[in-house]
Length: 352
Image 1 (cartoon, helix red, strand yellow):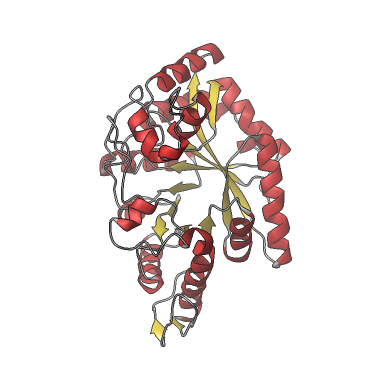
Image 2 (cartoon, helix red, strand yellow):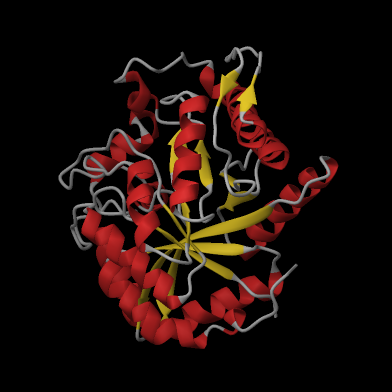
């Protein structure tokens, strides 16, 4: 069986990745993110990734209204961790690539070569419009063109320490960034559309994949095929919310309780009024998809969860999984005790 890498999707925004009144209600404190990262490093997780969020979705839970800064968080984690790789996210509309590049090099040096970067091309219009940074709705169609120029500049600066890039969105004049990083800094992307996959194939090293086993196989194969056309190799990362308990029935009851507490006010802001069924309220399928932020949610006993990841390692070529939990402290402790020792994929063969 193949070896499967594990990462943690850090709770950098209020209440993590479930918009419900019936989950652990928590603020995204430095202490929480520090403790979760250190625990994951102790367990043997390969990486920690933090999203970037500049505007939340409100509701009674004030979902994501409170958030830490992704880059700054990783700078704080760099000197207190030893092995785990650190991936902040950059919303590329909010920062010039030359500034982003220098910050990345700084944290790369602080972490002694454990830094990578997740590129966010921007999907939540209000998040950027509040700062006067939204370039217009045409950005929905051109965002990967913008991101391609952005990452091209990053790579030029990291490789050469200078860039004279001239494009549609950026024009640089002997722009400098020194010292250089300790390695080729890995880039993570999240493209699943045809254009998004092409961007990842051309510019990225890992791609977020969202779906069940069959979907993981499909998208992972597409990424590999597109990357092959560019003479590159791109791995995939599967995202999952984990809702586990001693038995499948207990886990399902926990899931149902969380769904019953859905923060509908926040969900309306997430999905937009157009998605709301005016006669019957939000459909259950849409509610479930929105309240878990589109992340596939694994519901089952500790044994069931472990078997799912072993299936993923055996039946797909996904390189890594990234996990989120309703209650990061308690659920991570349960994962350590009841799931981690069962994982055959952690005893498998690492790919070259």
